[in-house]
Image (cartoon, rainbow, N blue to C red; front, side):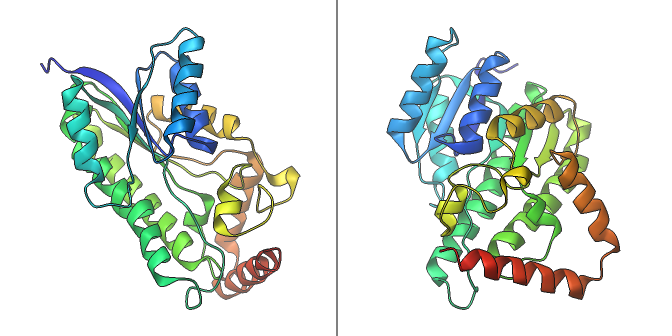
Length: 265
């Protein structure tokens, strides 16, 4: 048995769904490690957790677009005498626009963060996850079920997250490691602004969910060992309906939607 203490590592913890997941795991008694680039926001969140009577999270400032991100996290954890029981891969971003016209380097950075970093962190600590009967929560999107003209690379990255997580769920369940992919629809966060849109959502208010609701559903699903969770009845019904929708018509509909979104930039 390892002498290292178990912790929950949450990436992209400085805002949005990541901050909501931090609060949700803290409420449920987890000792936390927060990973993001914005130290000031993580420190403020860590102070908030302490004020609620929970242990202060360890803050790691790291750019997961770099290839040495997982190694850095591992070194800091070992130096602190801890190891992961749960990994929450939330860090990611999207970009609105034609793939041929968007900055190529920025799109490759999106792949590094949304795919490579998530994959590396999902696999880097499997032994410690198994020792502590823990798991992995990967934050995907309903975009992973859809074609995405107008956000081509982002949608493709979330399709990878969905496929990878489902397969990893099957591979690791025999070792007692839970793997859940959380697939929210539109959420009121900074995602839309980072993607290049005005406002805090890419959809009407009645279709948009709060980060807190998403975090609760994701946490519950992970603890129950569910493979995939899609928060919200409307999102579930939408994904059910598109199974019967011709792909070429779905592509055309998504293209029109993203063209309208791009006009808001």
